[in-house]
Image (cartoon, rainbow, N blue to C red; front, side):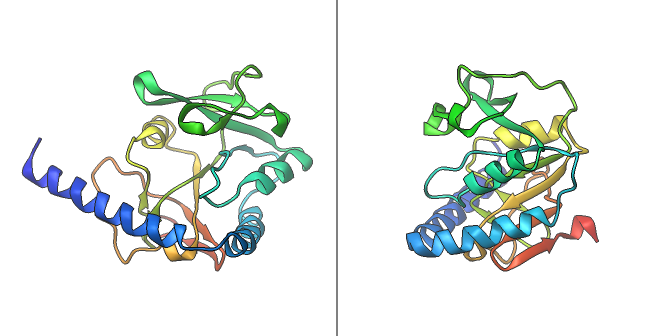
Length: 197
């Protein structure tokens, strides 16, 4: 492993800790209010008929349950990822009912036992979790690269990452394989990234 790569990883991990602390310092009430605003802003970016890949959030993240429920209520084809630990990939399944989500790998809710396979290339929009972001469209994930691998294979999907505004960095240290986001959604509104300008 090169010295440069190693120091970049170190820098990213330091920023992850900072962003985690910022996010975790929000109260439950703040997360709820900010999450509702994020939900409203998200729907300004998608169009009827698109297949949307969402994610089921953990308590510490932006609560995506209202987004997933509204997607189902409004008739969108909703897809969720299932984590495949063996090869750090994501397997996709359609989700027809939120009650099908059960805590699974890393305690992430997944439709285990109710999987409906998704054909290759079916996803139009992907909603991503993250720990930090910058206005260029840089996204700091959790470090395992599951989404990076998925995005590499699906370069044409519209990438919308969700976070609280306090998770913004001036400029993230990025690697060549880091995929830039099209939009970042926070409680303050939609950031149209440099990729979109």
